[in-house]
Image 1 (tube, rainbow, N blue to C red):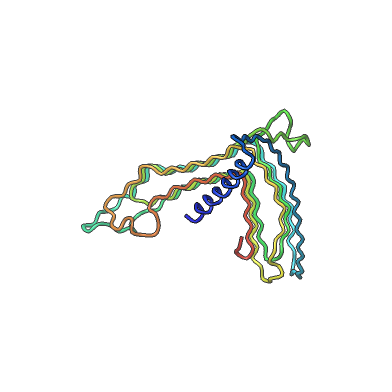
Image 2: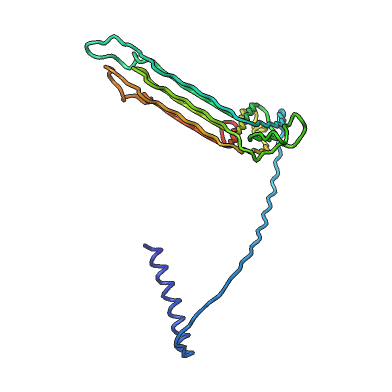
Length: 244
């Protein structure tokens, strides 16, 4: 409400000034027409200086190129966990546990270290145009042709079992995990270039899951049926002593 009052007051002041000028110059009408072109240039520079005495150095150069189609499929179907029924019902502990997990990744790199880390990472995932060759021939790679990363996970027709379905598709993934013994090593320097020209798709399906004669369903912290699908083009994860 305060903002609206200030805006209204500002408009009233501007209008009053205009009316005063119109009255003094005896204008019956005023018409304003203007064109404006604004070009702005912003230069930003930053200088930082760090003085440390690291115990060691983990230096890595990672170059990965993957072309084509990558797929992962997990299917669990028709699981019948026959439980002898009790008069007062069966417990959750009598349930079986079903997991259906599919993970498809174009390029993946993981670096774990307990000393300071410097990493130069380049990952390219795309389709393949045979007319321009492959890296093995030394000819250029056509990265404009889309690739495909597909993960499909399913759990169907399940009786008396918890179900966890997880499908993950990633074009490029880079993970740096730094757990140091010394504060002087608690830093990471990373140059990361990731190019993903691809259709990245993940599908997770849980269907026909039944529970018969089970007491205490829905009372715990863990879901009885979980279905999760994750699709990522490029992913970079850097942790230094547990912090992003």
